[in-house]
Image (cartoon, rainbow, N blue to C red; front, side):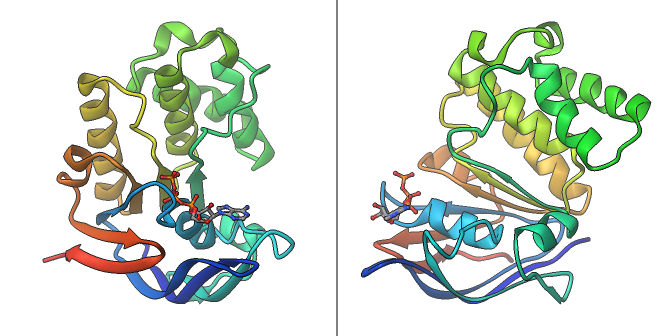
Length: 222
Ligand SMILES: Nc1ncnc2c1ncn2[C@@H]1O[C@H](COP(=O)(O)OP(=O)(O)OP(=O)(O)O)[C@@H](O)[C@H]1O
């Protein structure tokens, strides 16, 4: 089980305060939704939790801990098993679906045979077993979202931060992906899903609502 803790975590872009300092604890095994209208600060919070905001872009206050260890930068964060699925999926248009999942695994030193096995397993899990050879550019927005989730799952994340990862999905695929996120939590990951979708948020253990950067727990973990 991997715990994610943010203490006094805040994000500003120059004079604009995107996230007012907040405390957050997502226990391994739990799935938390971050909700709020457009511009509320959801992506900024997820990027701060991933230690992925560069100082040239944003001022981040506070600390992030994974399993009690303070995470210094994005390199530390990746080594600690923090995986971010960014809002526009972060896939390279010129790679195939298979390559999109395979390349980060090989870069992390996962042996080729195991990496190929994980690619096939995760494409199948997101219902895209037939689409492995398709270029990302040839996939629909919803299919791309599922490839981005498959890529994240293949990394066996300890902390999974998914930014609007179900927004382009039909109801059936949304339920499939929420179930898969839930399985990642059951495996021990701390899962955070930023979403506009009340039906997706309703299926999480707790909901943190952001409004103009101010966070309120509207439903807390039991
Ligand atoms: N790189 C940036 N530079 C300056 N301001 C930014 C930057 N990124 C985000 N912002 C501003 O920070 C605020 C929060 O943006 P953020 O993307 O975190 O919100 P969000 O809740 O994820 O929105 P959406 O639901 O539309 O994705 C907004 O006012 C946005 O304009």
